[in-house]
Length: 145
Length: 110
Image (cartoon, rainbow over all chains, first blue to last red; front, top):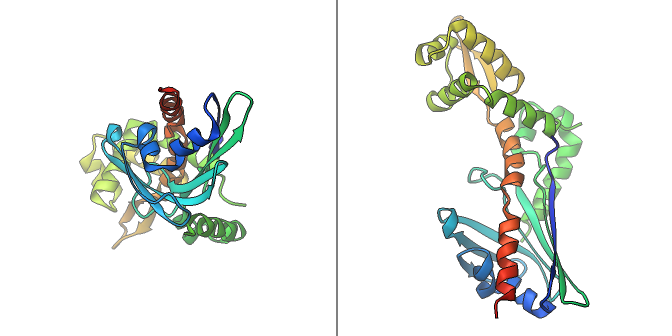
């Protein structure tokens, strides 16, 4: 049972790219289909804090990574269910492409199969050193504002 | 080689599949490091059963043991394998199908 590191979905939408883009990258859009509340700025280096009423007011912070108008929107957020302070983040990317009928939207969430940082600091340090350095770089990259 | 994430989560789920092992882990999480005598006193499990489950939990990396005072061996809950299993559960808990259904409906609305 391999851990799925990456989740991908592709949607062929009948709407033009600008309408899909607005649904993904405006607070009004995000609260229309995603979370129930959102505040912050959808711009690289900024955070958008979201809340989900239907999940017991669960909160998540979207650390916005890429806002490439009409084509790529990406953010990092914490691993669902991990305790507060856990440094692991998954990377969520929305890619828009024009089609004859409208827009193709591809959503990818990756980084589920990460090694917890604490693991690297305890008994497995010796045999994971090389891999650990790469992971640390990944975490830094993902956390970079 | 990193520890195999798949093997680690498999051993966590195997360990958690047994109600007595869940009880032992829950007791260590609640009360902190304990001896097998402490655990036998708290749980409705024989001392023999406690020893057998502690051995499996130790192999799975979910429990570590250390010498306490005298000849007492203290068992301690270890969270790292749980965090790896959490990654697995997070992938299963990701709710993109429902979110994207809502996005499609929102976009199609007049």
